[in-house]
Structures are given as C-alpha cells and as structure tokens.
Image (cartoon, rainbow, N blue to C red):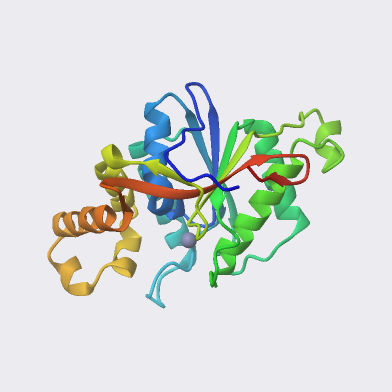
Amino acid sequence: MARAGLKKIWSKGDRVLVIQAHPDDAEYHAGGTIARMVEEGCVVNYATVTDGSKGTFDVNMDPKALSETRKREQRAAADVLGVKQLFFLDYPDGDLYPSLELRGRLVEIIRKVKPNIVMTLDAWLPYEIHPDHRVTGLMASEATVFAGMPNFYKEQILSGIEAHKPEFILLFATGSPNLFIDITRFIEKKAEAIMRHESQLSLSFPEDLMKKGLGEVRRELVRNLRKESRKKGRCVEPMRMFRVGAGHFIRE
Ligand SMILES: [Zn+2]
C-alpha cells in the first residue's frame, strides 16, 4: 500500500546519486530535496545522460558550444545546492533510446559511487513524450536494481569493481507520488540553482519578462515554485519511492 506523507528516508552520511536526462532536470524537479539532503549531511553526486546540445530555439547555435555552456551552468547550479561530483555521459540530446550499453554505464557509476539512494526521472509519468526523460528514468531504474547483482555486467566485477545495491530509489517528476518532501525552507535555494541554467531561462519564461531582467525572472520563479509546490500550507516535492530489491522494486 502506498504511503503518503512527510516520511524521511535519509540520514547523515548517506550517499545519493541523481541520474538526470539533461542539465537542469534535477534542479527543477528535486532541487529543494537535494539542498535539504546536503544540509542534513548527505553526499550528493549527479550523472547527466545527454549533452543538452539541442536546448535552444536558435537554429544558428553551435551544438558543441551549447553543450559546454550547459555543463558550466550545471556545475554552477550543483555548487549552489552543494552537490559534489558530476558525471557527464554525453549522449546526443533528444535521441536517447534504451540500450544495454547505457544501462551498463549507469550500473558502473552506481557500483563506483555506492549510493544508498538513487534519484531519477519517473519513466512511467503518463504522457511524458520526451524520450530522454522516459529512457533515462527506465535505464537508471534498471541499473539500480541490477547493480547489486554480480552476474549483470560481470566484466565490471572481474575488473575489480564491487557490486552495490542501493537501498531506495526516488522517482521525481512523478504522477504517482507516495512521498512528499518538505522543501519549504529551500525554495529560495532551489530558485537560485535553477537561475544558474541561464541559457534555458528563455525556454521557460516569456520574452517580455526576460526583458525586465534576471531579478524579475527570479522573483517570478520563486512565486511559481511556491504556488506549484503548495500542499497543506507547506512547499513539497512529490516523489515515488521504492525499496530496491534484486532485479525489482519492492512495493511498500
Ligand atoms: Zn529534461
């Protein structure tokens, strides 16, 4: 039976790996939770699957240059939240499809980072059309349940990398939450991190607001975040949480 509420699943010293499709997914959907985890003593690392090279309306933009800009922005946003290490897998933006190779690369990162908690996009969000979001969520979920099983990607084990089973997975950008993380104190920090993705702001905010300057954009962002996240007088980020079993999620 799914349990809703403000249950807390991490404690000081826990390691968290966030696997996202694009630079900025984690800040938008889980930035408050990540800031709170860091403040409460967790070590948080990111793996970003695609290179973000198509995140623009400008047809003259050089994809390589945009990708580099977005990596810089991701580092700056991660610094705001206190995220430690960033892995970039550099798959072409928008073209992600499931592969055993991508799954294996994620298994290897999980085995090396040894997170207690993996966080990723919910691959089962109804009507999610963006393949990068669906596929990242699916491959990260499969990698999470197989990383602890040594006969999966056995060549990694034979090369000296240990199997590692995370305890929990948290799916963000979900339509079926069973956990609501209280981020009331972290709204400003979440907004600050999102603002670091400066190249993406014009995709989310209207031109007339952008012309008023970043100060106005930030104020509007904070207002939107407060409004969208309100639940019973608090600000929350919804998550779908599962315990991780051998090859499966464990329903609570
Ligand atoms: Zn995205």
